[in-house]
Length: 204
Image 1 (cartoon, rainbow, N blue to C red):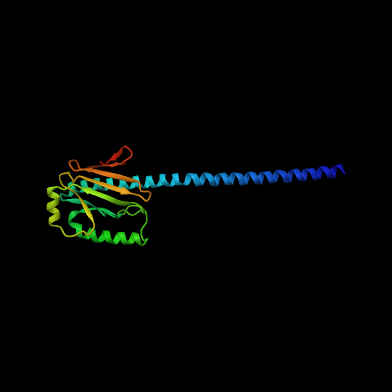
Image 2: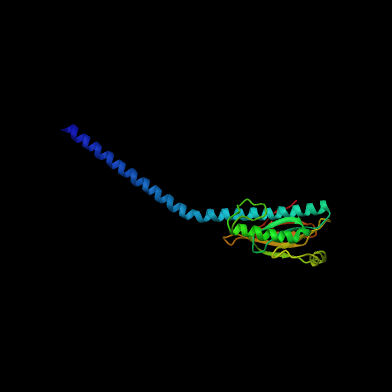
């Protein structure tokens, strides 16, 4: 009889322990869900900011490439970009009209979902050029007066002597965060600047 009571007691104890373990597991899961819900917006914001910074870096590098090509090939190059859009490219300015047509095609492909986040001439999805302030200069004005139409496309000139137009290009992500690329015309050197942080890298 005592053995039977002891066995019953062991079974009840095992059941009680199993019940407590299940409750603890549910508690841990609940805590993880709460922590994830709280942390998710912060993680998303961090990833969005990193993507924005990398995008500005790509534009800055494109400016450096345009400067080098203008010097090397002895003709005006431009960084073409679409205000309000995601297209940008480095090419001789004489290709202005073709670049305008290409920009329209690439933007349409993005709208239709036929592009990825790894396109050489497009910013990642969700990031756009919101502002493009390009300083006027006599050389740029003269070249533009003889050029055709590039549609909504805007050029930033780089000249064979290593100079360029002054420009400030602002990029924005879906979280409304912004970053700027500042181009100094006298040197043709660009740097990325966060309006709420210190300036970052310069192009070589």
